[in-house]
Amino acid sequence: MTVTRSKRSAVGILDDKQWRSVRASVRRHAGRRAAALLPVTPPSRKQYEYAELNLLASSTEPLRELFEQHAAQQALYQGLFPVDSPRVWSRPERRQLLVGDATVPKAPSKMEQAYTPDTTTGEMRRRHFDPAARLYYENGEKEKRVARGTKWFFASARDDGYWQRVILAVRHVAGGEYEDEAAVAVRAFTQLSHVLPGCMGVVYDGAFRGVHRDALARLGLLAVNKQHGSVKPRAYELLRFERCRHDLWCDQGRIAERVLLDDGTSTLVPVPVSRLEHRQGRTKSRWYHLLSIPCRHGAHSHRVPVGITTTSDDRLGTDPDTGRRLKSDAERDFHRAEHLQQIPEPTLAHQRVYPYRSDAESVHNQLDKSQWNERMISYGLERQNVFMLGFALAQNATSRRIHLESAADSNRPAWRRTAVLG
Image (cartoon, rainbow, N blue to C red; front, side, top):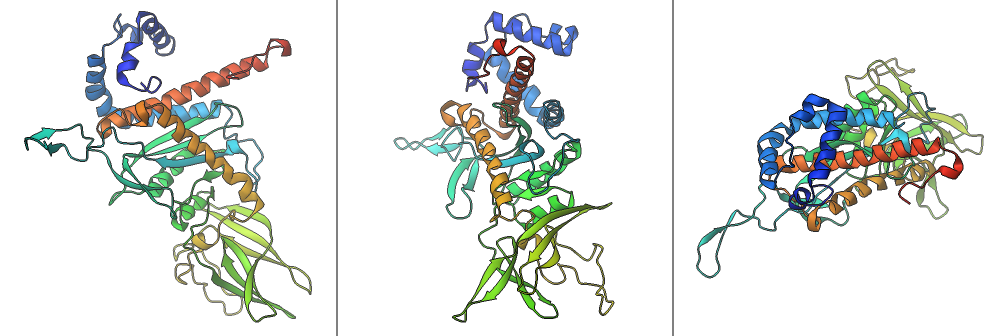
Protein backbone atom coordinates (compact mmCIF):
# COMPACT_ATOMS: atom_id res chain seq x y z
CA MET A 1 0.00 0.00 0.00
CA THR A 2 2.99 2.33 0.37
CA VAL A 3 3.58 1.82 -3.36
CA THR A 4 -0.02 2.08 -4.60
CA ARG A 5 -0.94 4.81 -2.04
CA SER A 6 -4.08 3.08 -0.69
CA LYS A 7 -5.17 -0.26 0.77
CA ARG A 8 -7.91 -0.79 -1.80
CA SER A 9 -5.60 -0.38 -4.78
CA ALA A 10 -2.90 -2.51 -3.12
CA VAL A 11 -5.29 -5.44 -2.78
CA GLY A 12 -6.91 -4.78 -6.16
CA ILE A 13 -3.74 -5.10 -8.23
CA LEU A 14 -2.52 -8.19 -6.35
CA ASP A 15 -3.53 -10.81 -8.93
CA ASP A 16 -2.60 -14.50 -8.96
CA LYS A 17 0.62 -13.93 -10.90
CA GLN A 18 1.90 -11.30 -8.50
CA TRP A 19 0.89 -13.41 -5.50
CA ARG A 20 2.92 -16.32 -6.86
CA SER A 21 5.88 -13.96 -7.07
CA VAL A 22 5.36 -12.97 -3.42
CA ARG A 23 5.23 -16.61 -2.33
CA ALA A 24 8.36 -17.39 -4.33
CA SER A 25 10.18 -14.52 -2.64
CA VAL A 26 9.09 -15.73 0.81
CA ARG A 27 10.24 -19.25 -0.08
CA ARG A 28 13.60 -17.95 -1.24
CA HIS A 29 14.29 -15.84 1.85
CA ALA A 30 12.35 -17.55 4.66
CA GLY A 31 12.20 -21.17 3.53
CA ARG A 32 9.58 -23.58 2.23
CA ARG A 33 7.77 -23.94 5.55
CA ALA A 34 7.10 -20.21 5.78
CA ALA A 35 5.90 -20.09 2.16
CA ALA A 36 3.61 -23.07 2.74
CA LEU A 37 1.75 -21.12 5.43
CA LEU A 38 0.57 -18.59 2.83
CA PRO A 39 -2.72 -19.31 1.03
CA VAL A 40 -2.78 -20.18 -2.65
CA THR A 41 -4.95 -17.18 -3.56
CA PRO A 42 -4.11 -13.55 -2.68
CA PRO A 43 -5.83 -12.00 0.37
CA SER A 44 -8.90 -9.83 0.08
CA ARG A 45 -9.16 -6.38 1.55
CA LYS A 46 -11.15 -7.66 4.54
CA GLN A 47 -8.50 -10.29 5.22
CA TYR A 48 -5.77 -7.68 5.04
CA GLU A 49 -7.59 -5.34 7.44
CA TYR A 50 -8.15 -8.21 9.87
CA ALA A 51 -4.46 -9.14 9.77
CA GLU A 52 -3.43 -5.50 10.13
CA LEU A 53 -5.61 -4.97 13.20
CA ASN A 54 -5.11 -8.29 15.00
CA LEU A 55 -1.61 -9.37 13.94
CA LEU A 56 0.47 -6.39 12.82
CA ALA A 57 -0.89 -3.50 14.89
CA SER A 58 -0.46 -5.41 18.14
CA SER A 59 3.17 -6.27 17.32
CA THR A 60 4.54 -2.98 16.05
CA GLU A 61 7.22 -2.66 18.74
CA PRO A 62 8.98 -5.99 18.01
CA LEU A 63 8.50 -5.36 14.28
CA ARG A 64 10.17 -1.95 14.63
CA GLU A 65 13.12 -3.43 16.52
CA LEU A 66 13.51 -6.14 13.89
CA PHE A 67 13.29 -3.57 11.11
CA GLU A 68 16.00 -1.37 12.65
CA GLN A 69 18.26 -4.39 13.14
CA HIS A 70 17.98 -5.40 9.47
CA ALA A 71 18.24 -1.77 8.30
CA ALA A 72 21.57 -1.37 10.10
CA GLN A 73 22.85 -4.57 8.51
CA GLN A 74 21.73 -3.34 5.08
CA ALA A 75 23.50 -0.01 5.57
CA LEU A 76 26.77 -1.77 6.42
CA TYR A 77 26.31 -4.14 3.47
CA GLN A 78 25.89 -1.20 1.09
CA GLY A 79 29.14 0.35 2.25
CA LEU A 80 27.78 2.99 4.62
CA PHE A 81 29.65 3.83 7.83
CA PRO A 82 32.92 2.06 6.92
CA VAL A 83 35.10 1.41 9.97
CA ASP A 84 38.40 1.43 8.06
CA SER A 85 37.73 4.72 6.24
CA PRO A 86 39.78 7.81 7.27
CA ARG A 87 38.06 10.13 9.75
CA VAL A 88 38.41 13.85 9.13
CA TRP A 89 36.31 15.53 11.81
CA SER A 90 36.15 18.86 10.03
CA ARG A 91 35.09 17.28 6.74
CA PRO A 92 33.21 13.98 7.18
CA GLU A 93 31.87 12.12 4.17
CA ARG A 94 28.16 11.82 3.45
CA ARG A 95 28.24 8.06 4.04
CA GLN A 96 29.72 8.60 7.53
CA LEU A 97 26.82 10.75 8.79
CA LEU A 98 23.28 10.13 9.96
CA VAL A 99 20.56 12.52 8.80
CA GLY A 100 17.31 13.00 10.67
CA ASP A 101 14.17 15.09 10.83
CA ALA A 102 10.50 14.80 11.74
CA THR A 103 7.41 15.49 9.68
CA VAL A 104 3.65 15.66 10.19
CA PRO A 105 1.61 13.93 7.46
CA LYS A 106 -1.90 15.28 7.12
CA ALA A 107 -4.53 13.49 9.17
CA PRO A 108 -6.78 11.14 7.15
CA SER A 109 -9.78 13.27 8.09
CA LYS A 110 -10.30 16.95 8.84
CA MET A 111 -12.77 16.08 11.61
CA GLU A 112 -11.51 16.90 15.10
CA GLN A 113 -14.34 15.14 16.95
CA ALA A 114 -15.81 11.66 16.63
CA TYR A 115 -19.41 12.95 16.85
CA THR A 116 -20.78 16.22 15.48
CA PRO A 117 -24.40 17.47 15.34
CA ASP A 118 -26.25 17.45 12.05
CA THR A 119 -26.90 21.06 11.00
CA THR A 120 -30.45 20.20 9.86
CA THR A 121 -31.82 17.69 12.38
CA GLY A 122 -29.45 18.23 15.30
CA GLU A 123 -28.80 14.50 15.46
CA MET A 124 -25.31 13.48 16.62
CA ARG A 125 -23.60 11.74 13.72
CA ARG A 126 -20.46 9.65 13.85
CA ARG A 127 -17.62 11.02 11.70
CA HIS A 128 -14.39 9.64 10.33
CA PHE A 129 -12.06 10.77 13.10
CA ASP A 130 -8.41 9.98 13.78
CA PRO A 131 -7.89 9.71 17.57
CA ALA A 132 -4.09 9.89 17.17
CA ALA A 133 -4.05 13.26 15.38
CA ARG A 134 -3.14 16.45 17.23
CA LEU A 135 -1.80 19.92 16.45
CA TYR A 136 1.93 20.46 15.86
CA TYR A 137 3.99 23.50 14.94
CA GLU A 138 6.34 23.18 11.99
CA ASN A 139 8.84 25.30 10.02
CA GLY A 140 11.18 26.27 12.83
CA GLU A 141 11.40 29.30 15.07
CA LYS A 142 10.67 32.17 12.63
CA GLU A 143 7.58 31.05 10.72
CA LYS A 144 5.49 28.52 12.60
CA ARG A 145 2.86 26.60 10.64
CA VAL A 146 0.14 24.63 12.37
CA ALA A 147 -0.20 21.06 11.11
CA ARG A 148 -2.72 18.48 12.31
CA GLY A 149 -1.82 14.81 12.22
CA THR A 150 0.74 12.49 13.78
CA LYS A 151 4.42 13.37 13.90
CA TRP A 152 7.08 10.89 12.75
CA PHE A 153 10.84 10.97 13.06
CA PHE A 154 13.08 9.38 10.41
CA ALA A 155 16.82 8.68 10.57
CA SER A 156 18.53 7.75 7.32
CA ALA A 157 21.89 7.57 5.60
CA ARG A 158 23.09 7.38 2.03
CA ASP A 159 26.10 7.49 -0.24
CA ASP A 160 26.45 9.70 -3.28
CA GLY A 161 24.65 7.10 -5.41
CA TYR A 162 21.16 7.72 -6.79
CA TRP A 163 18.23 6.10 -4.93
CA GLN A 164 20.50 4.36 -2.41
CA ARG A 165 19.18 5.88 0.80
CA VAL A 166 18.64 3.51 3.75
CA ILE A 167 16.06 4.45 6.39
CA LEU A 168 17.48 3.30 9.72
CA ALA A 169 14.85 4.35 12.26
CA VAL A 170 11.17 5.32 12.35
CA ARG A 171 9.75 6.73 15.59
CA HIS A 172 6.50 8.36 16.61
CA VAL A 173 6.82 11.79 18.25
CA ALA A 174 4.06 12.22 20.81
CA GLY A 175 4.81 15.87 21.62
CA GLY A 176 2.94 17.90 24.19
CA GLU A 177 3.64 16.78 27.74
CA TYR A 178 5.39 13.71 26.35
CA GLU A 179 8.77 13.56 24.59
CA ASP A 180 9.50 16.23 22.02
CA GLU A 181 11.10 15.70 18.63
CA ALA A 182 14.69 16.38 19.71
CA ALA A 183 14.51 13.94 22.65
CA VAL A 184 13.20 11.17 20.37
CA ALA A 185 15.95 11.94 17.84
CA VAL A 186 18.74 11.83 20.45
CA ARG A 187 17.55 8.47 21.76
CA ALA A 188 17.36 7.03 18.24
CA PHE A 189 20.81 8.36 17.28
CA THR A 190 22.28 6.98 20.50
CA GLN A 191 20.96 3.50 19.79
CA LEU A 192 22.13 3.62 16.18
CA SER A 193 25.65 4.72 17.17
CA HIS A 194 26.11 1.44 19.07
CA VAL A 195 25.39 -0.71 15.99
CA LEU A 196 27.10 1.57 13.45
CA PRO A 197 30.70 1.88 14.70
CA GLY A 198 31.77 3.85 11.63
CA CYS A 199 29.26 6.65 12.26
CA MET A 200 30.94 10.02 12.83
CA GLY A 201 27.94 12.19 13.63
CA VAL A 202 24.48 13.47 12.79
CA VAL A 203 23.06 16.35 10.76
CA TYR A 204 19.87 17.93 12.07
CA ASP A 205 17.92 21.18 11.92
CA GLY A 206 17.43 23.92 14.49
CA ALA A 207 15.35 21.69 16.78
CA PHE A 208 18.61 20.60 18.42
CA ARG A 209 19.72 22.81 21.30
CA GLY A 210 22.80 22.63 23.50
CA VAL A 211 21.46 19.87 25.74
CA HIS A 212 20.91 17.61 22.73
CA ARG A 213 24.31 18.36 21.19
CA ASP A 214 25.90 17.69 24.58
CA ALA A 215 24.44 14.17 24.76
CA LEU A 216 25.72 13.28 21.28
CA ALA A 217 29.14 14.89 21.74
CA ARG A 218 29.73 12.80 24.87
CA LEU A 219 29.24 9.70 22.69
CA GLY A 220 31.96 10.85 20.30
CA LEU A 221 29.55 12.08 17.61
CA LEU A 222 29.48 15.30 15.67
CA ALA A 223 26.23 17.26 15.98
CA VAL A 224 25.94 19.53 12.94
CA ASN A 225 23.01 21.93 12.94
CA LYS A 226 22.21 25.63 12.81
CA GLN A 227 22.55 27.79 15.88
CA HIS A 228 19.25 28.77 17.51
CA GLY A 229 18.28 32.37 16.92
CA SER A 230 17.69 33.09 20.61
CA VAL A 231 21.36 32.52 21.58
CA LYS A 232 23.03 35.87 22.27
CA PRO A 233 26.78 36.69 22.43
CA ARG A 234 28.38 36.10 25.82
CA ALA A 235 31.72 37.02 27.39
CA TYR A 236 33.98 33.97 27.65
CA GLU A 237 37.52 34.77 28.80
CA LEU A 238 40.09 37.56 29.03
CA LEU A 239 43.54 36.34 28.00
CA ARG A 240 46.50 38.30 29.38
CA PHE A 241 49.94 37.96 27.89
CA GLU A 242 53.13 39.94 28.55
CA ARG A 243 52.52 42.68 26.00
CA CYS A 244 48.87 42.22 25.01
CA ARG A 245 45.49 41.00 26.07
CA HIS A 246 42.56 39.54 24.16
CA ASP A 247 38.89 39.72 25.17
CA LEU A 248 37.23 36.50 23.96
CA TRP A 249 33.47 36.12 23.51
CA CYS A 250 31.09 33.40 22.36
CA ASP A 251 29.27 34.39 19.19
CA GLN A 252 27.50 32.32 16.49
CA GLY A 253 28.69 29.03 17.96
CA ARG A 254 32.39 29.92 18.08
CA ILE A 255 34.99 32.08 19.84
CA ALA A 256 35.23 35.71 18.69
CA GLU A 257 37.46 38.54 19.87
CA ARG A 258 35.97 41.84 20.98
CA VAL A 259 37.77 44.61 19.09
CA LEU A 260 37.40 48.34 19.82
CA LEU A 261 36.74 50.62 16.85
CA ASP A 262 37.77 54.22 16.23
CA ASP A 263 34.32 55.59 17.05
CA GLY A 264 34.36 54.04 20.53
CA THR A 265 32.10 51.10 19.69
CA SER A 266 33.17 47.47 19.54
CA THR A 267 32.62 44.51 17.26
CA LEU A 268 33.14 40.76 17.52
CA VAL A 269 35.67 39.32 15.07
CA PRO A 270 35.68 35.50 14.68
CA VAL A 271 38.93 33.87 15.81
CA PRO A 272 40.31 31.38 13.24
CA VAL A 273 40.02 27.71 14.24
CA SER A 274 43.09 25.83 13.04
CA ARG A 275 41.91 22.38 14.09
CA LEU A 276 38.96 20.49 15.61
CA GLU A 277 40.36 17.98 18.11
CA HIS A 278 38.57 14.88 19.39
CA ARG A 279 39.85 12.96 22.39
CA GLN A 280 38.21 9.67 23.24
CA GLY A 281 38.12 8.81 26.95
CA ARG A 282 36.99 5.73 28.81
CA THR A 283 33.58 7.11 29.70
CA LYS A 284 33.08 10.08 27.37
CA SER A 285 34.64 12.10 24.57
CA ARG A 286 36.13 15.58 24.68
CA TRP A 287 36.14 18.14 21.90
CA TYR A 288 38.42 21.16 21.46
CA HIS A 289 38.94 24.08 19.11
CA LEU A 290 42.60 24.93 18.62
CA LEU A 291 42.51 28.69 18.09
CA SER A 292 45.06 30.85 16.32
CA ILE A 293 44.50 34.30 17.84
CA PRO A 294 45.87 37.09 15.59
CA CYS A 295 48.10 39.60 17.35
CA ARG A 296 50.52 42.33 16.28
CA HIS A 297 53.11 40.74 18.58
CA GLY A 298 52.65 37.32 16.99
CA ALA A 299 49.75 34.85 16.81
CA HIS A 300 48.78 32.98 19.99
CA SER A 301 47.61 29.35 20.14
CA HIS A 302 44.81 28.65 22.59
CA ARG A 303 42.73 25.50 23.15
CA VAL A 304 39.03 25.86 24.03
CA PRO A 305 36.68 22.98 24.98
CA VAL A 306 33.51 22.89 22.86
CA GLY A 307 30.35 20.83 22.47
CA ILE A 308 30.04 19.57 26.07
CA THR A 309 28.76 21.38 29.16
CA THR A 310 30.76 20.02 32.08
CA THR A 311 29.11 19.24 35.42
CA SER A 312 30.41 18.50 38.90
CA ASP A 313 30.40 14.78 38.04
CA ASP A 314 32.94 15.28 35.25
CA ARG A 315 36.67 15.15 35.82
CA LEU A 316 37.93 18.72 36.17
CA GLY A 317 41.42 20.17 36.44
CA THR A 318 42.94 22.53 38.98
CA ASP A 319 43.99 26.16 38.78
CA PRO A 320 47.80 26.26 38.23
CA ASP A 321 48.10 29.44 40.32
CA THR A 322 45.98 28.55 43.36
CA GLY A 323 45.81 24.76 43.10
CA ARG A 324 42.07 24.82 43.68
CA ARG A 325 39.60 22.72 41.75
CA LEU A 326 38.18 24.48 38.72
CA LYS A 327 34.45 25.08 38.67
CA SER A 328 32.39 23.20 36.10
CA ASP A 329 30.37 24.94 33.41
CA ALA A 330 27.15 24.14 35.25
CA GLU A 331 28.51 25.70 38.47
CA ARG A 332 29.49 28.83 36.51
CA ASP A 333 26.04 28.92 34.85
CA PHE A 334 27.66 28.62 31.42
CA HIS A 335 25.96 26.35 28.87
CA ARG A 336 29.02 25.59 26.75
CA ALA A 337 27.21 23.21 24.39
CA GLU A 338 24.68 25.94 23.64
CA HIS A 339 27.26 28.65 22.88
CA LEU A 340 30.18 26.69 21.35
CA GLN A 341 29.48 24.18 18.57
CA GLN A 342 31.85 21.55 17.23
CA ILE A 343 31.37 22.83 13.69
CA PRO A 344 30.11 26.44 13.94
CA GLU A 345 27.57 27.65 11.40
CA PRO A 346 29.55 30.54 9.80
CA THR A 347 32.40 28.26 8.66
CA LEU A 348 33.30 26.58 5.39
CA ALA A 349 33.18 23.16 7.08
CA HIS A 350 29.55 23.76 8.08
CA GLN A 351 28.66 24.91 4.56
CA ARG A 352 30.06 21.66 3.19
CA VAL A 353 28.36 19.30 5.64
CA TYR A 354 25.00 20.88 6.51
CA PRO A 355 23.51 20.58 2.98
CA TYR A 356 23.39 16.81 3.58
CA ARG A 357 20.33 17.54 5.75
CA SER A 358 18.26 18.13 2.61
CA ASP A 359 18.15 14.35 2.23
CA ALA A 360 15.73 14.28 5.17
CA GLU A 361 13.34 16.49 3.19
CA SER A 362 13.56 13.98 0.35
CA VAL A 363 12.34 11.27 2.75
CA HIS A 364 9.38 13.46 3.70
CA ASN A 365 8.56 14.07 0.05
CA GLN A 366 8.60 10.35 -0.71
CA LEU A 367 6.31 9.78 2.27
CA ASP A 368 3.80 12.34 1.02
CA LYS A 369 3.83 10.85 -2.48
CA SER A 370 3.18 7.36 -1.09
CA GLN A 371 -0.18 8.45 0.40
CA TRP A 372 -3.48 9.03 -1.33
CA ASN A 373 -4.02 12.78 -1.72
CA GLU A 374 -0.93 13.22 0.50
CA ARG A 375 -2.96 12.22 3.57
CA MET A 376 -2.39 9.41 6.02
CA ILE A 377 -4.38 6.38 4.84
CA SER A 378 -4.75 4.71 8.27
CA TYR A 379 -6.69 5.65 11.38
CA GLY A 380 -5.19 5.20 14.82
CA LEU A 381 -1.59 5.17 15.97
CA GLU A 382 -1.17 1.38 15.82
CA ARG A 383 -2.23 1.12 12.17
CA GLN A 384 -0.19 4.16 11.23
CA ASN A 385 2.85 2.46 12.78
CA VAL A 386 2.28 -0.43 10.39
CA PHE A 387 2.05 1.94 7.42
CA MET A 388 5.27 3.77 8.40
CA LEU A 389 7.18 0.51 8.73
CA GLY A 390 5.84 -0.56 5.33
CA PHE A 391 6.96 2.74 3.80
CA ALA A 392 10.47 2.37 5.23
CA LEU A 393 10.67 -1.25 4.05
CA ALA A 394 9.64 -0.25 0.53
CA GLN A 395 12.28 2.49 0.43
CA ASN A 396 15.00 0.16 1.72
CA ALA A 397 13.98 -2.60 -0.69
CA THR A 398 14.34 -0.17 -3.60
CA SER A 399 17.71 0.96 -2.28
CA ARG A 400 18.97 -2.60 -1.98
CA ARG A 401 17.81 -3.49 -5.49
CA ILE A 402 19.50 -0.43 -7.00
CA HIS A 403 22.68 -1.19 -5.05
CA LEU A 404 22.78 -4.79 -6.31
CA GLU A 405 22.14 -3.70 -9.89
CA SER A 406 24.86 -1.05 -9.66
CA ALA A 407 27.33 -3.58 -8.26
CA ALA A 408 26.50 -6.09 -11.00
CA ASP A 409 26.63 -3.39 -13.67
CA SER A 410 30.10 -2.25 -12.58
CA ASN A 411 31.43 -5.77 -13.20
CA ARG A 412 30.21 -5.81 -16.81
CA PRO A 413 32.24 -4.49 -19.75
CA ALA A 414 31.72 -0.81 -20.48
CA TRP A 415 29.73 -1.46 -23.66
CA ARG A 416 27.24 -3.66 -21.76
CA ARG A 417 26.56 -1.32 -18.85
CA THR A 418 23.08 0.16 -18.44
CA ALA A 419 21.94 3.33 -16.71
CA VAL A 420 20.03 2.76 -13.46
CA LEU A 421 16.78 4.77 -13.31
CA GLY A 422 17.90 7.18 -15.97
